[in-house]
Length: 307
Ligand code: ASP
Image (cartoon, rainbow, N blue to C red; front, side):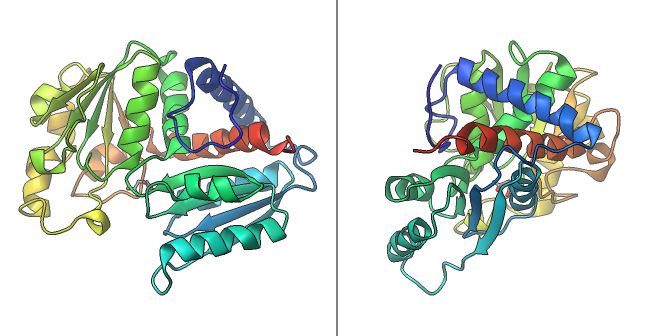
C-alpha cells in the first residue's frame, strides 16, 4: 500500500490505499449516525482550511470532520484578485509554518497550487480542489456512496456527463474508478471534452442515449462557466436539451441506475429537479453525508502523525 504524507490527488494512490481509506470512512459513517464523536483523536492538532475559491460543502464538511475528531479548526478565505499568485502562496506558506499548523486543507483556482504549498509547509496538505486538476476527497466520497449502494466498487459502468473539460471532479473520478476496475464513459459536447481524455477504461460519447446505455451510475457535472473562456455552448437551454439529465435520458441507463452530482447543482441546466430529487434514484444528499465521513478518514490518516 502506498504511504502518503499529503493527499494531493488520486494519482499517487493505489487500490489498497483507496480501499483502506474507504473502509476507515465507513466506520465514520456509522460513528456519525450513532451521534458519537472521537474528540480525542486530533486533540491539540490544528487544521487550517485555506480556501482561495468559494466552497460550501467541501469547506463545511472539512470543518465538521476536523471538529468531530477534536482538532482546532481555523477557516481562512483568501482573495486572489489583488496579489500576484506565486507570491501569495509562498508568503502564505511562511505564515502557516509560523503558526505550527498540522493539517492544511487547500482549495485554489490554479492547478498544482496545493502541491507547491506541500513543498513549503510542514503540515500535511490535503487538496480540496485545484483548478481543473483534481478533487480527491470528492472522488473518494463518490466511491464510498457507490460502494454502499451497489455493494461493490468494481466492474460498474459509470457515465460522467456534461462539462468534462473544466471538471477536477471528473479527473479524480476517472483515476479512482478505472484504478478499481470500473468502466467510465465521459459524455458531453466536443467543446467540453478535454484533449487526450481517452485512456484504458475510459470511452468518450457525444450522445446521451449511447453514453448512458446500460450505465449503473449517471453522474451529472455543473457547467463551470467561471473556468470557460468564451461561449463553449450555444445556450444553456440547448445544453439542457442535449445533455441535461432528465427522466427521459435517465431511461437509457439501467433501471436501477443511481443519479449523482457533486454540487452545486444548476437545476434545469445539467440536471432536472425531477431526477435530482427522486429519492429512489438520486444519492446526491447521501454524497454530502459521505463527504464528512471521507474527510474524517483522511484527517485521521494524515493528522495523527508528526513529520
Ligand atoms: N464542487 C465541485 C468542485 O469544487 C464541483 C463544482 O464546483 O461544480 O469542483
